[in-house]
Length: 202
Image (cartoon, rainbow, N blue to C red; front, side, top):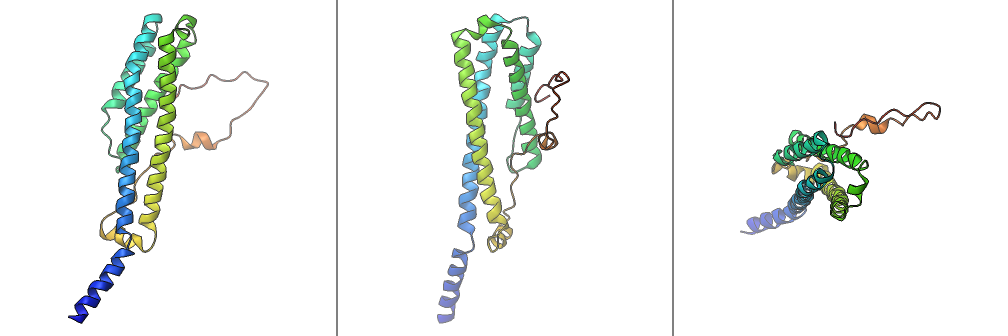
């Protein structure tokens, strides 16, 4: 009887320090942070039809740009993402990048239409879009931090033993789309005209 009690107490002490609860807590924090990322991307997707319709009223001849935004939005909202699957996360990130690029092209086109830029509805939508882009950045950063904390726990001893036992693996996170492009310093030549920038996301 005394042996069973000793074993039970020893097992309880070992389990208390094994990190199981920490893994569960951090996994839930990742899910909550991911939910916020998706929420902010959905907010952006919901703003786009109003933005496109407002621009269409002033710049109907810009059909290709308007169509590009509409198609990129459709593609971005159709991607089924599993945040635990690196390939799925990459596909989601690429679709959102295409949408960001299409929106950037739309806002460049807007510069050619001063009457559109002065329209109150457009200015309100543009301000909401800018705010949403900032919220997306904050939500992504929180998600990245939650994944980082979880991944550290999964890899540290002794919680790595618990993680292996309960099949908790390192989770993928957002990455830079073109790491080589941001690592390379920009070339500066004041004697030659600047090359036209490549459209983002394309």
